[in-house]
Amino acid sequence: MGRIPRGARQRKAGGMSEGRSPVGSHSRGVDWLRAMPATAAKVLRRASTVRGYRAGELVFRPSHGPRHVYVLEDGLVRLFRLTPTGEEFTLDYVRPAELFGEMSVLSDRPREGFAQARVESKILQIPRAAFVATLRAYNGVLYSVARKIAGRAIDYQSRAEELVFLDARRRLARFLLRLAKSHGQRHGEGLRIGLSLTHAEIAAVIGTSRQTVSVHLGEFSTAGLITRRRGYLDLPSPARLEAID
Ligand code: CMP
Image (cartoon, rainbow, N blue to C red; front, side):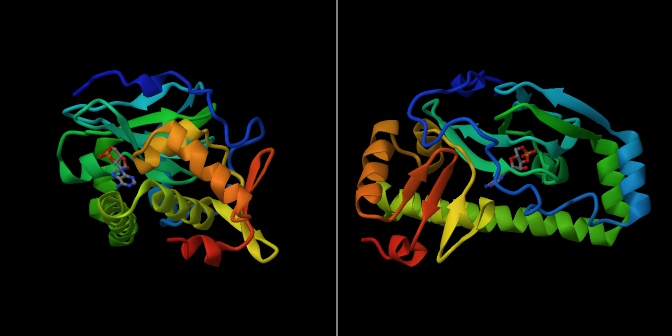
């Protein structure tokens, strides 16, 4: 535990797109605090502090006794783990209003993952005790956290299966489709992704090399399966991407 990942530095190489705000829509995530009873949200907010993070700064790292859970107020956060061979494996990108860092606190187990501000971000830090007390007091809040965790577990299971059964090209196609569904928006017949990730970052999500990602993105582009624009990636026909073999 506690190794500093290479990911604490910012990556520049192999951009899928550059500049621009990396998030297409801020409103798609579950607005965690707003979804709970107003009194509970007020109590939590009062017990919490807001902190600003620079792009590339770590929000948390593995620890035996995590003291906070977090809600992203503004910006973008990447959650990742280090594999036994020291590679970064990206778990997820957190959108504004989403809760993260809840799994270790809820399970009372050590935190094994890292969170890193991907761009300049504002994050609400909720003390562990206040979070747990609220869960105990409000079933509805507990339900929303359990739902989030169940969703993460199902996604992770699919990704583990993809790692075992699919080659990098098909993993990339699945990743783009997932990204379009979670962070994208409808664009004509297709989907538009407004999240700006480098090829190296995509590689860390699907468990392959940056070079492999570049080769397959180039191939998808030539086949008309994706269109790359500054700040955007379009999937003109998600069904075709889904059907690649
Ligand atoms: P915690 O275990 O405290 O620290 C790492 C965080 O990453 C974890 O809480 C969740 O918020 C998040 N996380 C863990 N596993 C996944 C996953 N499979 N998919 C998305 N997010 C995850």
